[in-house]
Image 1 (cartoon, rainbow, N blue to C red):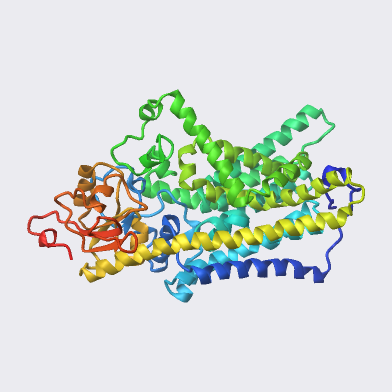
Image 2 (cartoon, rainbow, N blue to C red):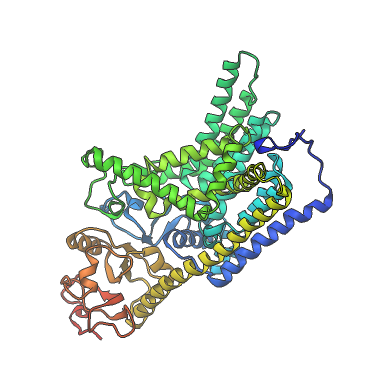
Length: 574
């Protein structure tokens, strides 16, 4: 039998009522709202916008074309072992770092609609929209009021400053419902009477892991939940029997293995490791984020520990602070965070929320220790979205709790009306913040896409063949917009960059001012150009009136000449 949860001790427990058929309108309305928001995002900016989404689209199109998991570029060298390979070839096996689910879900849509931007974005709009009615159902199941449940669904449909990412062909729209579902199912198991729900969480954790590798942290929370349940039962000496039977834990682990085993078997067969990028050391054993894109800086324990205790602790603290800031701003829009904390205090003993609290603690701890240097680079943005549905439930219950606290000091308040007013105000704030974030974020994405389009047009105008290789800071983006494969511009000395260019037969170099490496700045500014880099065939001025005359350009495309007979590097700049 269900229960209605009353944080802060308000009101008696209530028996759950079976919802009539007309109640289906609420989840359908929430789905419609969420889908509409995501379709608007696609209409405003239909293309992938950054390396992650470019990569997932490239793999999806390769799968749809029957070429399997491969890409015609090296987006970062952890994909090929973290070093310059002895046999540098393209294309390369895909997904040594990123997981496959965000590419797999695109394939049926590409078959139906062709390799278009809409085909890649549409599955994420649909799957992501399902999260809103699921969040409503989750909130009702854990005993929240109807107002809180509806508000949670609306906030998931319009997730404040994270909204612009929700239609990108990335793992946001996949990871969020899978993490929410796993936490919901595990909480039902801990509540008691729902061992099958706990078992089901194993399959959801498996799918979350195939969406994003740190989905395994959700599995750690689910596993620790079982351990904690047995420990509490042991301490109670029979007064509190275990709520999760052993068979449910075995089934949970078995379903996780069944879902993930084929993929990890593929990784072992192709790369010799279930986590190839981690095996290089480049994920965990780097001092700064710039080392992630370096071939010359070793990713070893001696290098990592050689930085000293002070810098090591400083980077860990910086990672944790950055993770908290990202969650506060993107998910909570700053304003909702205090109410989330109030709601969390009210729910601190709720078994339904225990998996969420545990996962949140594990996630923040991991990003403040293991992945600290990656947090400022954007890795935590993807993880934070998995916390959002339960966080919005806590925020709205926190608003109710804050109003109840205020009413005890102001008896004239109408608690019901005041709670409704502040709840609507919070949702209104989310809508305004989401609109502002969408306009600003998509403007930045559009500017970057324009740079990619300029480079692609310059390559076409210069007569670059489709099979000629390009070196750029965003090899995945260059491939998406120009159709030409290549390798990433590594963050190393010019001699190492030249070695990479020779190894892969690079014919063109694209430099972008806002996203480059230290060795690229002197070339872009016209101060110093290696002998193997010719004069630019095209430049995009940095500002109206600027241009090659003063050396200030935003984008430039250069020929790369590794043979003296290549006349392109002796030609004058146009």
